[in-house]
Image 1 (spheres, rainbow, N blue to C red):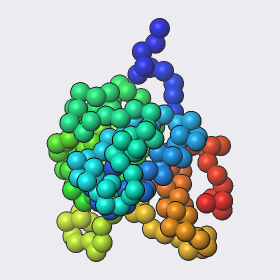
Image 2 (image 1 turned 180 degrees about the vertical axis):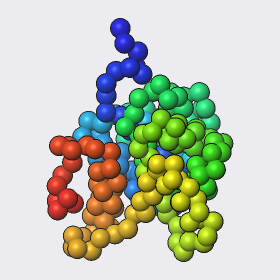
Image 3 (image 1 turned 45 degrees about the vertical axis):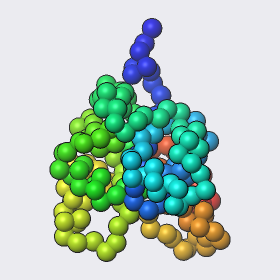
Image 4 (image 1 turned 90 degrees about the horizontal axis):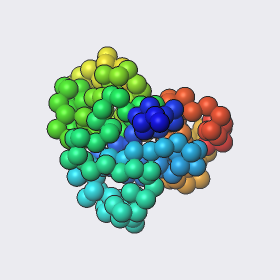
Length: 193
C-alpha cells in the first residue's frame, strides 16, 4: 500500500497571515473545495486575531473549509517535508513579515517552513502580498522570493469585469492566483469571474 505522501492527488497548502485580506484565503479554500482539490491550511497567530476584525467567522469556521488544518507551531507536520507532494502553496493574504522570512530563508513557524519546502522542491509558491506603499526593503524581499522561483501576486482588483460586490473582486483575484497552479478544467473561464 502506498503511503499518503506517494498518492497522486491534487493538493495545495494554503497559508493565511495577519495582513489584511482574510477573505482572500477563505475564498481560496471555498473554491478549492468546489474543485475537489485537497487543502492543507496553516494560519499564523496574527491571522487568528485579524479573522475577528475582518469577518463574522471564527477560526473554527475557517478551519472547516480545509481538508486538514496544521497548527502553526507544528514544525513536524506533513507540509514541512518535501516528500509530501503538493502542487504548491498559496499564501493569501501574505504579510510583509512572512514575505521577509521566506526571502531570508528564516523559518520560525510551520507557515514559513512550508513555503521554504515548496521553494526547495521547485513547486509553485504564490504570495498575495498585502502592503502599500512599499519601501526598498519590501521590494528587495519580493525580488529575492521571485529569484527563488516564487510568484508575487498582490490582490489587485480589476474593474474591467464590472464587479458588483467586494466578493466579486475577491473571487476574481483568487481565481487568478489559483490559475497559476495549473488547475485547468476545474476553474471558471476568466470572463466568468
